[in-house]
Image 1 (cartoon, rainbow, N blue to C red):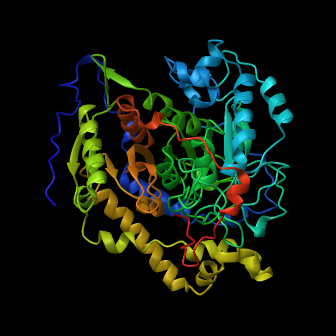
Image 2: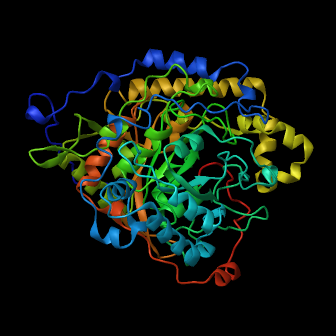
Image 3: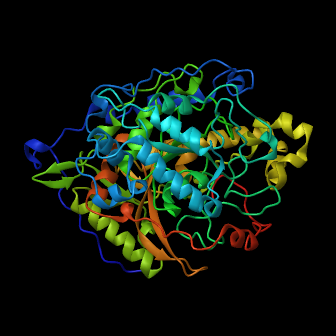
Length: 560
């Protein structure tokens, strides 16, 4: 297909950008050989099987490398301007806007909570975003206890949705699976504990694909949670497995939320529901107190409304945790909030650091005209904010190595006791787990070898030519960071509905700063991330009457 070429502009450098330009900091470059050896040591950590065991009751460590709950790390987290329309309906506010409104006494946490409760009472029976949430009186009482001071974090009084695989003390945590039907943790996950310490108020536990697989559904296969952009048509998936969180944030039932990703479960729901989702580098945030799927490629991360909100969330819970050895010995968490702060040169938004955005040869090939136009526009806008865009060919063996990183054997290993006790608990997930039981150790070792070979291929064949890369979820298996963000809307071919379109950027290890800076610059000159979906018009009873079962051939993996 012949396409209009994208002409890159001169990137920002110390010689072209003037005094406002910032030099690329040393911590944006990570030695690749060090990363390979470090990940090998972490992934092979001995005795880690007990980290997530029911007997592991050590309290999460709240001190971390993200700058703590006070200090200059939050200096630029507060929105300089607040949209008037969002103040009229506080459920429209971003974290950054709500925190600024609290500080300026334009809004208080109780008013914010009341706005969300009103919307929940009207619509959550249709959205079915939550599996469990406190009573309204309890949530209002929590909001009344919030005191906004100069030492408060931007999350103080903010309403969040947490995926139902994050442990919450004395609150059911089920993974939306019969395997954990009666499980009530005795302690909080590190992520949940740190969000609470930052002042966030959990609206509830969000629905998810059973044991982190696909869209939210009942054991008999009946789909539950809808996509917030198509609330009247259950056929269009909210994506998974963090679909409940995505629907809660997109449908304005929470300001932001948490998810986990093993094979697309943060980035895919974010793309499907017009959100900015950030999957950090493996080990950047603790997995302690999260129902596992694998030991080597699970990642917790935020699903948010824009780059700044994603940065605020990750800044709050990232960093080392003595309860999770995979987080130890990593580079310190940088100032992610500053990276997501819009940088300006001569009054115009510009990417904070000189950045080459690579895109694969098929990014502008084989797409329908609507998608092709959106992608061309995306590259043009990235160029306009100072990025250099460049086609980066796939290295040799890309297709082979990128397809070898399976999770089946690892997921089975995590649930062997439950599988031996009662296989019926796994419902439609059973075939995948049984498949893992028949994997030989030789087969698994070859998969791990392929994973490391693919990591080497990416670092030496992709990131030697660009700083960030427009990619899919193939980076999950090798632990590299990804950010998903919206870049337009399109018409779904099955339902004829207008739905969001999004894409994903990947970066080298610990490249969250660069990803946030690029998306922040893009969002400073576009409004896709500000679009909100229509409210439901159907009733809950009509929804139940129109419920359908996920097809039998549904691929029950982490990614939808």
